[in-house]
Image (cartoon, rainbow, N blue to C red; front, side, top):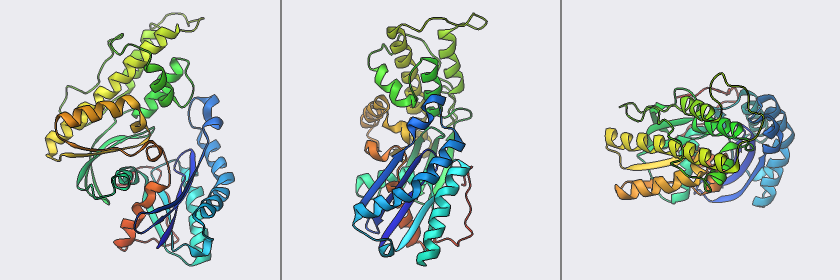
Length: 337
């Protein structure tokens, strides 16, 4: 069975063809970073219009790379939650049109479950049950994942997601968008202990995250409240030190909550997904901390961390369970649990 998977939850237009044995026949991702860079973040209307322009060429290229014609597809899967409403609608409309024209089943994909399923794809074997840690631009959450399709929310961010905080702090430091990769690069040149920044909620028994106050603390290190705006850029060494100190604080918070989740649940398998899981320092610390405690850790390769359609191969699990959708399927921008 060959499944065409579409992904358009945010600012990446992606498609892939995957078999029911999880063999990836092709994968294409069209980035929009250059469209949003001037704004320092993703602009929903620009994102949805770009998806409209790119969805058909991306599908066409994906089929060509797989050596297939559209009639050889056995099912179409599409991410319909969570994400930006306009972006989700573009992918869903394309998927519905294909299913109607080809008389093929439609499969709904939960974008967050798919991020954790990327660990299953990369591992090449079953990783469930596990703890799922999703760290992205829009989400920072911990889940008890009994199966690929059964997720229980244990805790999440009460304000900014980690990726959102990276983007905002990068903007404060005069670094380009997207902020995560920019901070990751410059932080390698800085001193992680240069600035004493807060670790919100680390000393609590809650499995929640908070990054808004940390972002504000960086702002106050740059400019005190009530002070006149700076008329000169920060010194490169100061930018590097602030970036390194901020990044280390974020990583400390994520590690602390992941370890607390292991303690609370007794589950000693941790699967990590989402764009921020590509961060070099986070990956390094996760590997160190989990190895020391003999906790099994799965993190996908970098190409499966950021938004892509291959992780939508979780559709195989839904098909096996007989979970297909009617053509009145809708999008759900908020998280459906």
